[in-house]
Length: 121
View 1: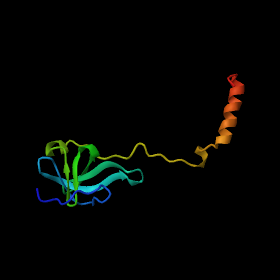
View 2: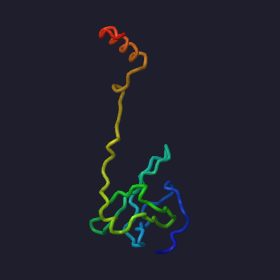
View 3: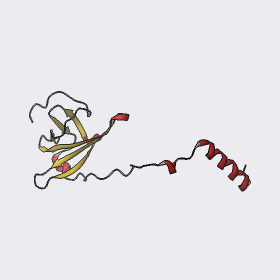
View 4: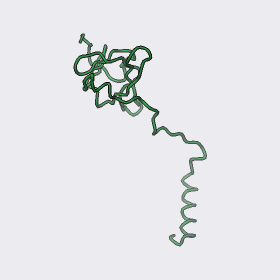
């Protein structure tokens, strides 16, 4: 494995840098960094493997040993990389609209009314 340079933050990790398994074998390139910088959470990377057609694998942050200027080193070997799952849409992603929000004052009135109706208030 070549010199990968100094350690870097996930915030500065560039797409396209090579990714190496713990056994030194190059297993692909960084397709995308998965993170939420607003709350300083690094989830992992999407690894692009293969040539035509390229396939993608999700590498969890816990499976990454080093982030460097010119490459990423995984904490798993190349055989295990092949068994990584494909990335999927975030099931926790939600959207809310004005209809989903009830003011505190209205909520309190509804609770008091329900308490009277149900005999618990």
